[in-house]
Length: 142
Picture 1 (tube, helix red, strand yellow):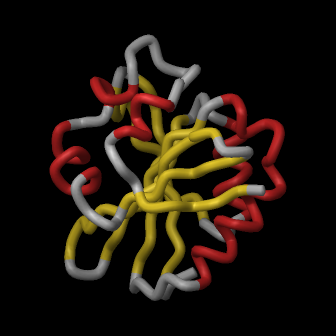
Picture 2: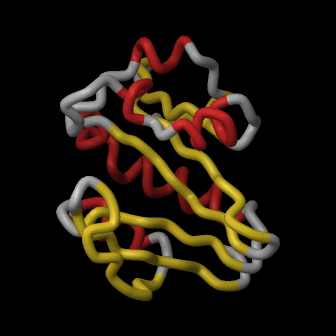
Picture 3: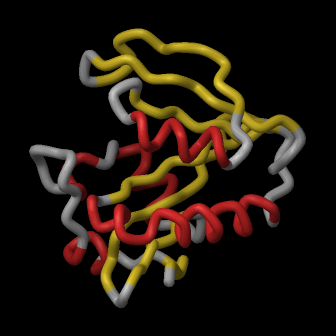
């Protein structure tokens, strides 16, 4: 079973992100640390009493919010539960525009985002770490 709980810094210590060569606290950009990590906009994702990821919102402008997340490989064992939980949580949000960026190399994440109802808008070439990212959005809330 998947749970979203309020983030605390100790969760970073418990989290192992298998897709990065660095540890997650060093990877999260500084603007994320100030805008999210110290706000109620970040949730820790728990499965079987283990931290398996984080999800949060960042306000881009008055009408646009960006959803972001980090998941580790443990998510493979609970994909359906994660999908149902995210779908339920998205229904509670009411934003004019909710967007998400997904690496072009992360096909499972792209499928999840599309199943959640996000529509692909375009490709941001060489966006970060010399990798391409797709931008997806939901207009008028989830």
